Length: 424
Ligand SMILES: [Mn+2]
Image 1 (cartoon, rainbow, N blue to C red):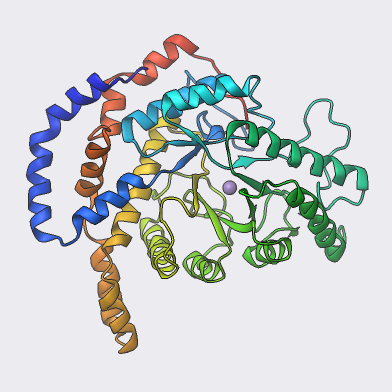
Image 2: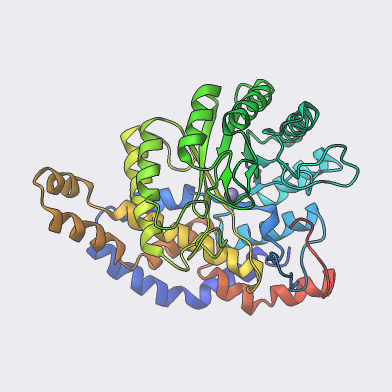
């Protein structure tokens, strides 16, 4: 391991006095800090296997050096992150990019790093070498039964890989849709897709969940067959109680009120999981919290309120994943920033004075409602998040330590300057 316990302990010792001063002050002022810290320690965010290399755009890809060359090295990267922050104890795999040659060995490796296998992801948006039928015109929606069957079989194969590894959920994201008016019969596309999802659903073990992810546009630009939360909810409702909607923050039209979508899906018991990222225009896949941290806080506020209303376990009852990948930053530094942003927004949401907010809502006191939310959002909770990290055995400042320990240089030394992560 590139960052071992000793390195973390000595890093923490260097920063501890300053941290403890800040924490003592904060603890005096704030009520309920201990309960928040407990929740923060339990809250883990899954890292997608495709985010560990520098992502490509439609125009080019610029590798950063030392990228993981195979599944084992991707797990090494996430293990490294988890050692630094004790908040990313899960990996979300993508098939066929990460098919484990030896599932048992991969499972053991995950246990060594303290990682679990989160949702498995299928891929019917690309054609793979030697694939019989093309997905150029869609997969589960396709006019050809053979193409549809191939996509169904692939998803069932992904479930099997997940069973071998101890995962318990499947995320289905379909690129299906159309780019020109008249290209597609919408009803047939919907019904074909539903039939395919039903076949996949039948192959799910009883303790599994199926997440149906939606996206408003891209790669198709006229229609997407699972284009919004309404369509996803329709499928999930028709399929049954193991099927849920998955919300990816970047998959909405500009200015969509994601907070409200989350609240209603929770109300219907149909919110299954989350893909975190940030964006300015569309599916930009930028670092979580880098553009609009207030929106992220408002979403977490609805998540916390909605989960508490149903006595749900924040850490376990929904799937929490990052789905971001881009060109400019070191992927590990980017992911450390994303996890930190998620924890900050979660901590702020836990600070909201729920009782006062309810009262203000009933009194139609709009000004007070805003004051209550913004009081929580404007609280600097970084010290609380850091305290939770220390208690979990992580580094006080993961990003600082990642740089100070020269982790990327060491990865480049073993993996090479021109290594390319498998995947996008
Ligand atoms: Mn996604």
